Structure formats: structure tokens, C-alpha cells
Image (cartoon, rainbow, N blue to C red; front, side, top):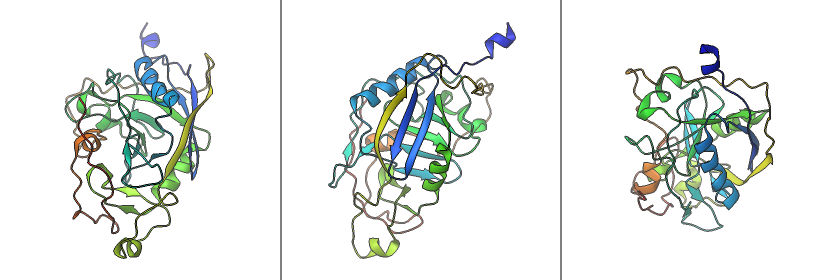
Length: 255
């Protein structure tokens, strides 16, 4: 019985997160986190992630997307969000897993934003804010693409984009008043379902979240969708690793 309780299956949908730096293939855990996967696939099938931007890189922690869309002009558009999904913190936030971002202090507030764990963040994210819902795992060489993204310089553009990775963009470009364009953002051209079979990648063995009932641990910089849904853009907050420009539209809070 105990073995059955902690046996998580890899029956799943497989999706490709197609970026201008390469493809990140993800095995979704439909059976373990059905509500979250259904929510994610609703955004996928609606085309909400087409031309989405990786807007955050927190070094040695996560990369995050799902908030902003670039449609060949600035300011960027906000991804329209629907009803928040119930939290399902049954799997662990280890390296290579994909999980949902949510508002601070509200476990059941995830909508469109997601992040990929760059390392084993289980001691923090399996506990903080009711535990962060892991709903898939990067497979094949997808983490090579993720690691390439983490090597890009980061810029503070204010609000939720206070640590955004940019391609072929420098502090000198920002100092000269140049605005990033299509070739500078880490763009997700689309997220596509490539395998909707009942059983995919059965060799995967997702790690269970065994820390969820612990009272220890706190996350100083949790993956949050609060900033992008209501955070102010500060045109004077322009420094992280390099100089940036404030280009994002202030996003209205949606509850």
C-alpha cells in the first residue's frame, strides 16, 4: 500500500516548447497533476504561448515565462488569463521540472505563468506557499537549451521583467537608448503537443514531494505571477547585470 501511495506514473502528454534558441521537450504528468496539466494545455491549445517571452532568469534557481507576448512592437502584451487552477503539490521541484508560478500567499492562484527549475529547489519550493505544483519534466536535450538561456546577460526592465535574459543586447545598447527587438528576446514561438498518447516515456520516475507537511523553509524570491499581473514598472530601476529600458505595460491585477 505504501509503495502504491508513492508510485507516480509517467503517463503523460508530451509538448515541445519551441524557442528561438532551440526546443525544450516536456513530458507532462497528466495523472499526477490533472487539473494543472489541463489548465496548461488550455493555454497551449488557445495559442496563448505563441510569441511568449522568457521574462525572468533567477540565477541558480529558475527561468520563468507565460506572462508577456511580443507582437513586433512595444510595449508587450499581457497573456490573457482565465480562472486560477487548484494547487497540486504532489511532485518535487527538482532540476529539470516545470512548475506553475502563483501569487504570494495564495496557493491556488496559478494561471498562465510557469517556470523551469535550474537545480534541486525542493527544500524551498516543495514547502513555500503551499508547495509549487510540478506538472512536467524536461526530457531529451531540453535542459541544454535551458542552460543556454541562463548564460545570457540579464536586464532590469522593471516590474516582473527585473531579470530578463536578452540575446545580442548589451549595456552599451541600452545606454544608447536602443530598444530590444524580436531578435533580442528569448521568444517562445509556440508550444505544441507532439504526443497525446496514454502512456509516454514510461521510464520516467518523477520524485514525490515528501516535504509538503514540513513547517521549515522559506523562499526569498518565489516564482510569482503577482508582479506581472499587478507590479508597477519603474523606469528608473534599470540595473541588474546590465542597463535596461522600461518597456513593459503595467499589467492590471486579475483575481
